[in-house]
Amino acid sequence: MSVQTIRNVFSVETGYRLSDDQIVNHFPNHYELTRKDLMVKNIKRYRKELEKEGSPLAEKDENGKYLYLDFVPVTFMLPADYNLFVEEFRKSPSSTWIMKPCGKAQGKGIFLINKLSQIKKWSRDSKTSTFVSQSTKEAYVISLYINNPLLIGGRKFDLRLYVLVSTYRPLRCYMYKLGFCRFCTVKYTPSTSELDNMFVHLTNVAIQKHGEDYNHIHGGKWTVSNLRLYLESTRGREVTSKLFDEIHWIIVQSLKAVAPVMNNDKHCFECYGYDIIIDDKLKPWLIEVNASPSLTSSTANDRILKYNLINDTLNIAVPNGEIPDCKWNKSPPKEVLGNYEILYDEELAQGDGADRELRSRQGQPPGPKAGRSRDSGRTVLTTWK
Figure (spheres, rainbow, N blue to C red):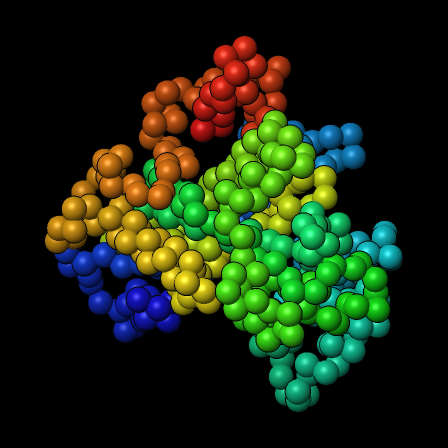
């Protein structure tokens, strides 16, 4: 189902009951994670709750920055948080910010700014009529632009990773091994003269495919395994492993942040497209989560990847290709996972006492840095898993 159909199926007025042998590919209120403004709101709330509980996960450094939960760029909602944004902007007036409409995809409506006057102009231009109230005007988010992205061959790229959630309570999620990088077609420059050149700044294929230098054979895409090999050879194996651990960590934390508010309907599963940017210090940042990641293919390899993605997703949602039964325990056997690997299983984690262990390990950071086994020479399961 498309997200619109899902809305109709679960709506109070027009909705209808799904029978036990019907399962659908979105959660009713997936937008708590996949709308840019709501994702940030939920992550902020999750941090505050952990802080209240005195959780070691909410630990901060001397500057008041979260040690383990600082994975979303500083973000404000507009027009609602305009005054808060201005306050933040004035602290570092040389920064660049990125404006995105909350409900659009494929890079539509996105632009970069580095002066307050540009926001004032946007605000004026978007008031189509004096009768439009503040609340109905399209909501935007404005985030601090990561102007030091990791570059490969001088170009900016982001990661598209596929994450399948079969249930939110208890949380059970899978990571697809065949994610990929999407590269810009034009070399990156933080120079303010290029702020409106989207071929420099936005990795969306919907934008890049119109660039003069777009390559239709590889589509500006690189597999995650290639990225891993490249980083291991240029930066070293240990920092690369730490980076991927941290990426897995922020995905799980973002899902934990929305789990309490998600309508965990037993008829639902969902495959999300996570967009991650890595900066030049090898720190990953969660940019956004897509409810309907593109399943069209731009290259031959892309076609094979998406075909396998759909196939593996269905094998987990409906094991053995049998008639679906929404009452099953949603624990498929290892053999059917295909290219998916289990990322987090809350029941297993609690069963192993992993959470208790985490709390008792005050001496060791509870983030993705924990759990490396030096002596055995192999990576043991990270503590948070």
